[in-house]
Image 1 (tube, rainbow, N blue to C red):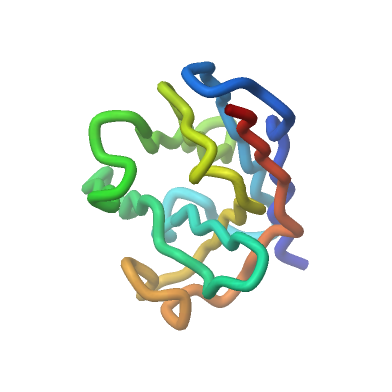
Image 2: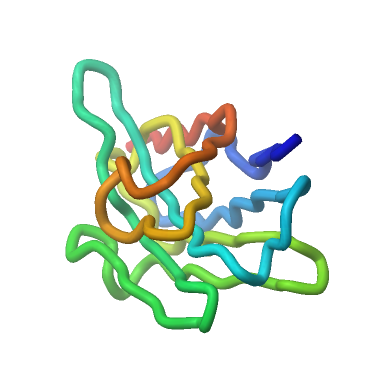
Length: 121
């Protein structure tokens, strides 16, 4: 049974940093692409960042230079380091796993439950 469990969200002020984690279990972590998406109230799910099984990275323009995606295949954990947070970063953040997943949600077949990030101005 595949499980993805996010943690690290919270309420912070503009300019602060947070580090999200996503612990994966149930299948061979190192062979899957991983991604971070977010969804704000009333908006569609938005791509944030992805990292391939081989370490190739892609980051959305909206967070480039502020957010960094990384993975630890030994600990089967995905990370999202978020710096210089802005109120518009407020959303529920989800991690996802899939063989063909990259920029689009439909390439991922397993999702975490999400972690809330709220940035106050």
